[in-house]
Length: 91
Image 1: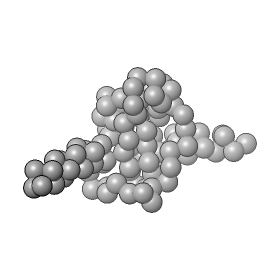
Image 2 (image 1 turned 90 degrees about the vertical axis):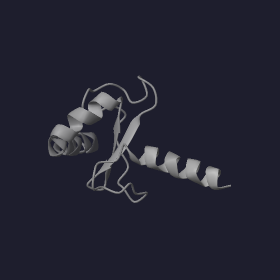
Image 3 (image 1 turned 180 degrees about the horizontal axis):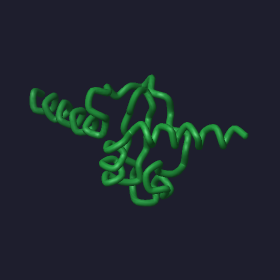
């Protein structure tokens, strides 16, 4: 039983690795509204399961782990890009 609990804890830790440092993963995060990656522009799911993270309360979906690294270099730039895409979609 202890082994099962340890395995479960490890799985949760690994799942949380995609979140930004200092940003707890939350079910209260604003859902990602786009069907493409903010960084590459590729369709989400085209390269396998999306990589998820939460940054400043916003869920972000990436097409791959490499895009997460690029996002982390200047996340606010990509949040501005997301806001612009959302605004354009409302028109």
